[in-house]
Image 1 (cartoon, helix red, strand yellow):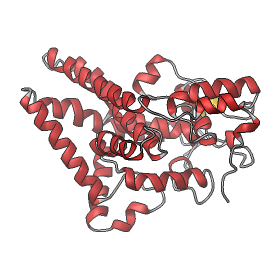
Image 2 (spheres, one colour; image 1 turned 90 degrees about the horizontal axis):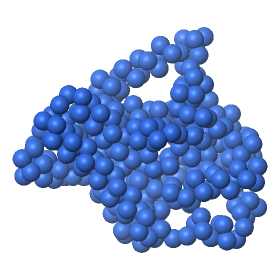
Image 3 (spheres, helix red, strand yellow; image 1 turned 60 degrees about the vertical axis):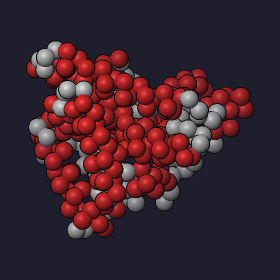
Length: 316
């Protein structure tokens, strides 16, 4: 079974649809620049504070979320939405978004497009991320502890190395949570070596550990988990309605800074309109709301609401 496709002309005027799908030029590069600027400023705050513990903790949360943001921008590139020029789109998505956080655009694109085509069916490669829910509060707490203590990060990276060099077929197995290709690991090594070299030249090699690896190993896995949960867990999909195949979550400023950057929370709209770039999804949401098209869409008022929805004391 494949997901029913949206018929956007039934809901949008020609002008509205043209505006929503206008070719992306400067906006994609600007988003990549924004992600790295936030990361750089947070690292600078750590250095200027003299590596103060509280500043490191706050910066790790901000940077970890922006590392997730790089993954989101890789996702945009997978849809060809970082730039109208394919070569620039793929360069931005691969080397400046995917590689630094250990992902691989070439692997991710066919995997993710398969998810779109088969979303919430038995053949959906992302189904194992949402199928276990609801879970008990204790189970979710254990997952959060594993994320924040680095256990999730090291487990995924160990799996990536094992799959890349010993069992490459595992990289394409349903539910594979990391990109396990030799080229992906190679690009991560190159980009991270460049980052370490630059920080060393600036006189702050420790920033690579506390300002990059620490967020990548702690807050980033948690933010990624919360985003994954919010997108599809416990969503009652009607395969005849493309706007019911994912959840949209309203976010406040703090949630956008720490959990859901770059409009990723408009996930129902993205699944129905997957060639609308992320920075226009809020506009699409407003237009669809005006049309009454989101009445059967799971829309959560925030991430705490989602957590309450996907946890149950009765679950073991």
